[in-house]
Image (cartoon, rainbow, N blue to C red; front, side, top):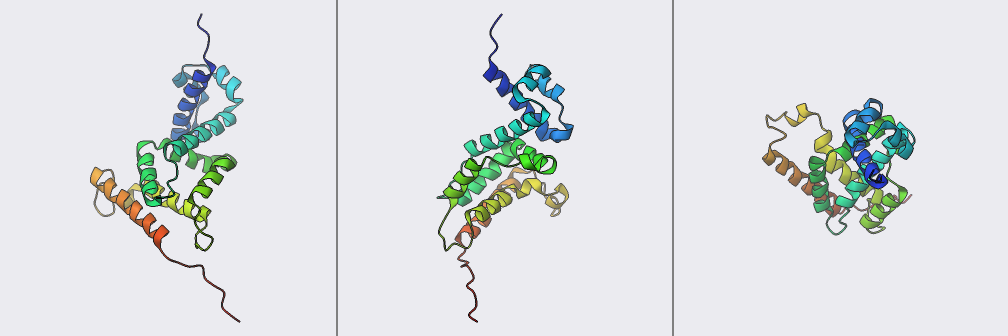
Length: 196
């Protein structure tokens, strides 16, 4: 009988869990479906991850780490990075979807490890005189790059266009890059206090 490859089994479980939880959330996700998709059994899932909460948290962390590795910050070209984030969410929507479920169902689990946040804020940090902190800048870039995927379909169709048309997606990607360019290039100095 061949030896079991624990790392490969865990990786299959995590991939199946990311897919399941991105589709159904924590409450709707079923460990039985994850086990079937991963080609393992429920007992192995609990042995590796403890319980459903542990599995969800591990799947969330895996999806976020994968995104961070595939689309790392580009401090020298933040508009291009925003465009790359837009592309990533179109290509691989699971990271965004599982993160949204986590925000709704397990907010304490819905954050990257502090080291990841620190690395990103350090990477995009500019000058002390900049009106936007690194955190503000990251929040705005993520918001702009994800907005298309979070907007109701009715609004996206309000101008009569097909939001899934490749030309429309390219135009929106261009809008994302333009918006982030304006955010990072605008000279909006910090307000100074009025003399009394």
